[in-house]
Every structure is written in structure tokens, then in C-alpha cells.
Length: 182
Image: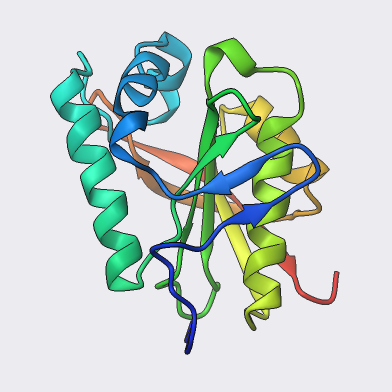
């Protein structure tokens, strides 16, 4: 996805209730706190367990670098009083389009924030020329599949052995897509 004239380091996406903004050093503690949650650790398999402040710092540094390199639009979902979740739009997907991901902090769940993050990032991608976006969700993560459907994504199929699991095995994933014309 080409983004001439777009400075991802400062790009902000606004939704009805959220400001999807760049990560800053001030977010490290909230990222650390949110990732202590066993449910987050279950689905974010790339995050080490235990998850330390140093891990949170490395994560923030990585997503800030991705923005600077133009490869991703990772965001803090801020409802006005700090981090309620995070989201990301990986821009390197060729045929399937950019990939969206989201996570909601345990203290902010069940308020529709994940749906708002996914929808906001999809709308941003479409406004910048993406013909489609997609999500990859663990087949066992029913809550995330419901979020995808509420955000206007269509279940497109199951991708076998697509996701690494903590125990060293690979799990199946559900592929969801959303077109700019949907």
C-alpha cells in the first residue's frame, strides 16, 4: 500500500469515542499492565510470558519504528483518559491487503472498543486507497470473531496451521476480509 504524502509518525485516526494515536513513552506502563492479563496472553502469542516492563518498552519501540519505516500504523486506543486498547494496521500485505489487529485492555472490555478500533483502521485504510483489508483470528477466539463480524468483516475461510501457539504447535485461523465496496 503506497502512502505518498502521509506521515505515519504523526497520523491519528478518530472514531466516535476513540483517538487512535501513535504510541509514546508514556504508554509503556499501560501496555505492560494490559499484557499481564491471562486472556491477553492467551491470544497474543508473540508476547513473552512473563511480560516485563522491558518487553513493553521493546514493543513500543518496535511499533514506533514501524510507523517511521512506513510498514505499519500501530495505535493506542485512547478514550480520553488513557489507553483502553491497542490496534495495528500492517501495510505489507500484498494480495489480501493490509492486516488489522486489535486488543482491549482488561479494564476496558465489553464496551465495543475492539469493534471501533477495527472499523476505524479499516476506514482509514480505505480512505488511503486500500481495496481490501483482512483479519486473522484464532479459530478458538470466538469473541474476536464476533468483533470482526460487528466491524463489517466477512468470514472468508479457515487457514490451517496458520498461527504459532505457545506450546510449539500451530493452530488454525479464521480469515476475515472487508472490501472498500462493502
